[in-house]
Image (cartoon, rainbow, N blue to C red):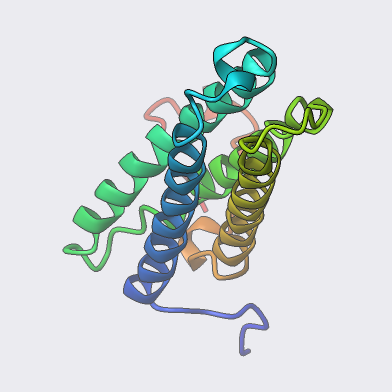
Length: 172
């Protein structure tokens, strides 16, 4: 009986995941670089918007660092065709959490009032644009990884009685 679930080869799935993670890392770095250009503005130097941007930047870096690690490890895993790191359930969970964190990092940025300073154009648009798109790309990566999940990962075997199997082997 043919499977109704779509299938992609492991190298193709890892390449898609690698590209989406690299895109997220680039968007998150672009957000940081855009805000870095206005660090010396009166709004930031005068501590008028420091709390809001600090909240956004701390959540941004909390996601950017694991994204860079994922890019490096998935690139290394590309050498091994049977390894499905980057297209596994852990990646799905991380991407969903990272998407929510990126979207929630905008909560305090949306509270910033425009004071008329020239830097406010960057402060009000860069985080909203880059972080919103990065969060959406994280959700897209989770969806793609879920849709094309490897057959081995689709089933979860739950042992009913651990005492009936003392050598802890999975019985199917």
